[in-house]
Length: 251
Image (cartoon, rainbow, N blue to C red; front, side, top):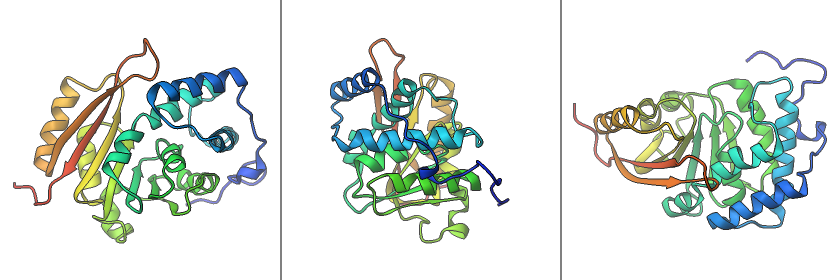
């Protein structure tokens, strides 16, 4: 990995001023959490403000996101990530190994580890600079057993054998076509482990059919499809859960 640029380019959260959420913006987010049944602890606001400030600061020199307004950040990054919180609670328990694949700016991993700090979280991105950003960002969360790493999922056996086929849950949001993710996650998930995809409104039709075909040949089984809507009137999104087979796939 090339060295980071000198001067103002910094990954350290304390090098960026804290940007407070406007009261109306926070209240709208809090109301959306209540409607979705997402618990909102008092400390969550401070954590999210620090994560947001760090993201916006680093984003000035490292391309992480096009979502920069606080209201859009809270809805499209945080609320969207937390839409799968009930499923993560159902699929895992304290101490389980949860990996966010293609984490990028850190979503859904950063909000999920903030709400569920008793799991062991690993944020993975193939790009070294983004993984370096994630290492700093996760220090802002209350999760004591969290790390970030740079490798491709299919390279887990060689790059991180301690993670290979040991993950209880892998999450993936905006990481390309669903059909391609089974190759990336086969070497990460333990037999019986779950792959949780956060899919947008365009998922369905041909993409869904391709995903189901690829899942079968890769030894995955579709378990759940849960529709979610972030706000009234928004297009419907899907949370899709596949389980890795306990036996090797044929063919």
